[in-house]
Length: 383
Image 1 (spheres, rainbow, N blue to C red):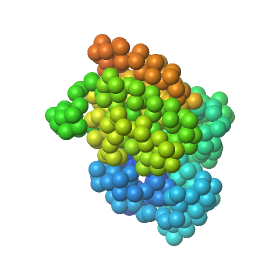
Image 2: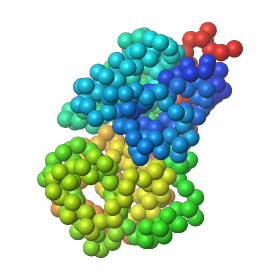
Image 3: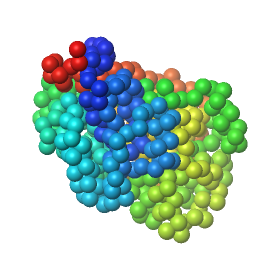
Image 4: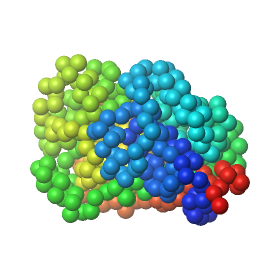
């Protein structure tokens, strides 16, 4: 599946701060962390400020051991078009002042699209990590972003063979596409705390291994519609009558709950402030079931061997569906699916734990570092 030879030493020959890694959200930080470490001094981390605060991004820099990024201002909290325009303007100014040899973007955020457009405008080689994901749902802004980025990218790092097939079907030349695996595999393996620390964490929260549900809700399709948000919280509250339901609450989701007058539905849930990545993985590793609308969680559960209900109308990660995950909609169907998966009990959890992740072998970042080095003209490499 992943035939690209590994020689990350070539990445170390890149000049200092010559590879601009553009991102703007917490999941991007997680997924590029190992790649940034492999690039070493060559990495130049640029944060557009799409989502930036000490809880959601700042603390992650320290936890993941990442350098302080160049931070754009005036981007976060604005409508999508304004975010992209402001980030593009800021990135163009940065690249004009110090032209990188390559630009790397990850995923499908507004920050990633801004980075891709900025690289294209300056004629800088563009590397797209996690290329070829498709939900075929045009209502998703992320779908528009990822399609546009893939049309602009010079090097497309597809996580799976299905992702590569999507790109080839759209006419992307095969020579520009490499199947690397997904960087989430190494991210999870590196950040998951040891067993003893995980059990101490469960004790602090009054939880028993395999005895609770872990939920996250943050996507606009669920939080911006009061009816959908109420339906999800109602089903989670009903589940909490049988076992604890842990809900680390995204600030945006909390604001939507309060604005819709739904705070009463939180009464039976174990509501947490946003948690660090390692703590989230520890909670996920021992949950009997996860309920989430996150794309990253769809991948992480395949590494952790845990079942997941994806509360969304579509997914760009079909590889996770089936054994590990299934799509559900807000409402009674969510509760019914949760009880069905929970009824599988320890045997179901053992079955998932024995399955390999469809997202690769944990060496994606090394392959991508090699591809970045190859994208730079030989005369530009440091002696």
